[in-house]
Image 1 (cartoon, helix red, strand yellow):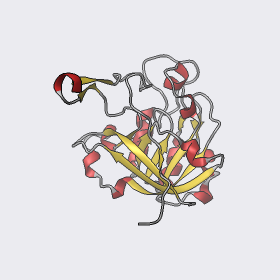
Image 2: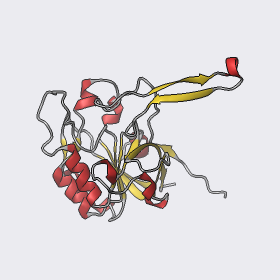
Image 3: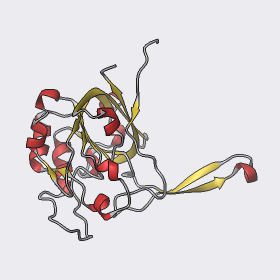
Length: 236
């Protein structure tokens, strides 16, 4: 094959000091064997939840008895789509149907849609990043469902706003995160959270089209998995 493709990695690196959803345990890894001592190096992950870093959620996350990771094929986790720029979004701000309608002419029914809020540019262990990210509101969820979106991706910790026990400044989300997830899953959508490098896709533009491939670990009967996400621009 002579044709060259530009592939953009939309995944965050995993490390023990990375930001992570505040109510879940941190990532931990250590050497089980080392080359110097044992002739080979083998690492063991001693703590890693399935919603760590860049990851994909499946319906089982909030709907008991529903589909899990291994119910989906590679074809289900790939396809054509669009990245849209919704910057700047403020702390805890809701993404609405009005925000998305501005891009109606660029979104095809059944597309994969990734949203750049700009939050990935401040990714760190700060209270702002960990608790006050922009999130999908009820009207936006209805709009995405109406457009039969295949997969929704976003560069924040969750499509829904923070609703945990830690008190934060400012109003709480109008709709609980679980409900937003449920609305999306019931519409046949999958969800990819905490993606990276959408600014490198957009390159200063408001919209970019291309092909997405989401590659989670193939773990049986789980509700989510860390994943690599790749984007191939269509303008090459």
